Length: 259
Image (cartoon, rainbow, N blue to C red; front, side):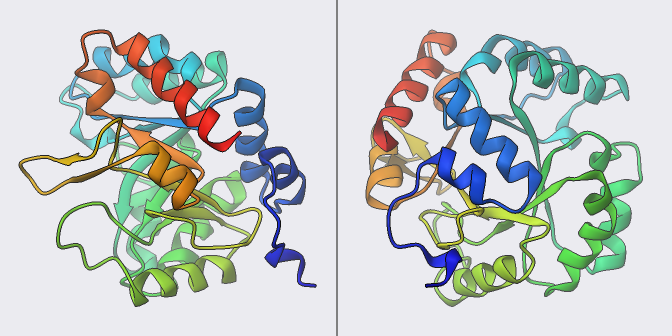
């Protein structure tokens, strides 16, 4: 039997042992240790706000997802502070950069410029539109630093083209580059490779949509019916009356759904 197509449900602890990429191993292990599969999407535009939520909600998280280029007051000290908070609260950093260019260009965008993303972000993500060269370009920079890539296979927005055959191709490309690709941004489980982790956005406690076409599914639908691993939640936590309480509610319900 192919080791990468095990039919039975594997625990995160099992998958940590089977995963080839050290970052996948680390993520699975900390998820078990902290009993959380919650990723916070923090779209703060002020550095103080981003760092506040990283510190305040960090204990409930396995991953913090950032958009570093929307900060209005970015300084090189911000990633240093984020890294310190990630170490303090034992979570990983995912810069939601969505690279989508040829390999040479993305290698520069990843490693150079004012953000120097490869120096601090454990994960980044990329579209597969340019072909496998985008993976190779990012790997050239991130591989030596033991960073990981998440491929955008599916999206939760209305009318998205990232579905069907596109998602299938993303799966194939990810599995072919498992030495650098750690998983997928998807709406469901795509790969039986035990080291591939699936992170899903568009999560709420109740189904719905927003005014820009974002579709929301319940975490039980995503984790139980669709077999994903990690839920990505942003506004429903940060705009709630009690973000700490809401974050822990999501963490508890999400963990119970896969336990």
